[in-house]
Image (cartoon, rainbow, N blue to C red; front, side, top):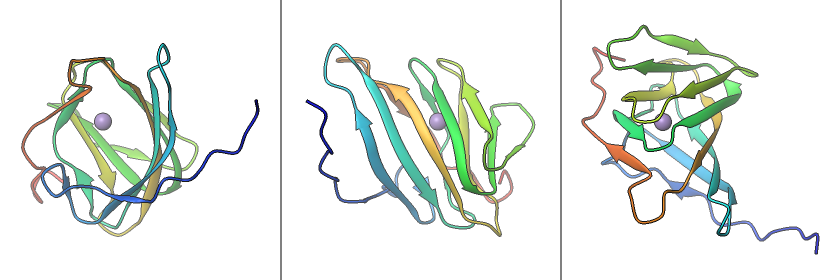
Length: 129
Ligand code: MN
């Protein structure tokens, strides 16, 4: 049956995984055998994820604002609305808003059963950002 899904309350990004104000809306959470996950993630200016990696990779699609993404040892990449960025499985990276703009992106990834979907590391310092 085609149905309009109930809307889960907006969640706050926990301080151990994020710096600054980050809020997310769950858009899609597949039921097995689907493992698709889609969140719309809202970053206040300067807010960003900690360093982390995804077991099966992640796709980011920017819908608003100006964002940044960086892989470990890689250059800082600016993301604007309409841009799509892929982070490969197991690659350490972070993403977030620039210091003076909001940013919203869709985050698309997959569950991994009993294994962690995402592994979290240290926070991104102001110098790195
Ligand atoms: Mn990520």
